[in-house]
Length: 357
Image (cartoon, rainbow, N blue to C red; front, side, top):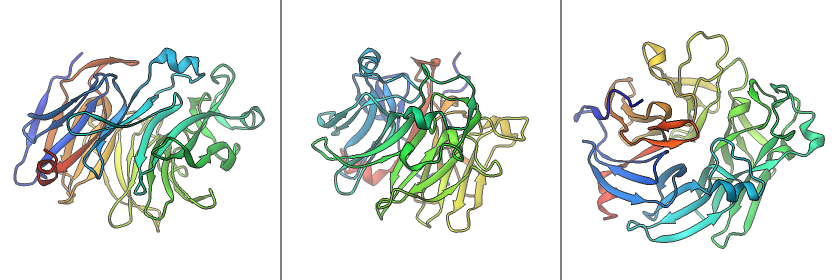
């Protein structure tokens, strides 16, 4: 069933940040660059549908993840969990291939580092002796008796591993417990990776309901927030803001002590571990995406929000006024059916895009 609204439905020219919005419909093998009126200014046609999303990196190239053939992944022993990818590519404005990296265990996110390497996120089977100690989750819901965890790897342009962090080597199987309503096939379900200025890694463990920073040198968790007192409910896309705070899309799935599911965007003071700003709709249920999704703080202080399962992109002011809104008309079939989902989206200034053409 298609949504009742399609295209740009709100556009306040006086308050919106003017630029171009980049997005990749999850059911279609395409990435689109759209102006504020909803006109498509550029188009990259891909051979496969997205594994997650596309973004422009510092050299102006398109960096994106896409889905490896399922049979190829299965032959390598990679289970088709949600968010699976398998291929990361870098292409230029005219869609010429610049760089490619393949691994059937890749999923969700990737990050091009300042040194030219790429941080990737992969699945790894948790050893049996550790898996049996993991608390939480629905009993008996392992994948063929196995539990999978996450590993981060820094990949050189030549495809070599320069650094690695393995979840089951650094987490506690008893205290880092799975949400009781989630299956036990995945322990952590990481969905993001951001390399900070000092080399530390900011990530989000959806099944553990927490956001954390991994110390680059020691591998220890040096900062975490979200898994106490029901602060977060299966979040996505944590990223640092210029003021040092962290912005998080809190999906709201399996939220404790609530009758109505809703999503919330929160800005967290990293030092105080307190929410200093948040956005939720009124009534609350009008803004809800149980999976994926993300945000971007724009140069004028506004926030671009991607609500995945609504196929909705919208921009709000710090005072929470919606000044731009778009519903995707691009539908395609994914594992969840025929949908207009968008994993994440990014807005780029007019001058930036002019420099790429």
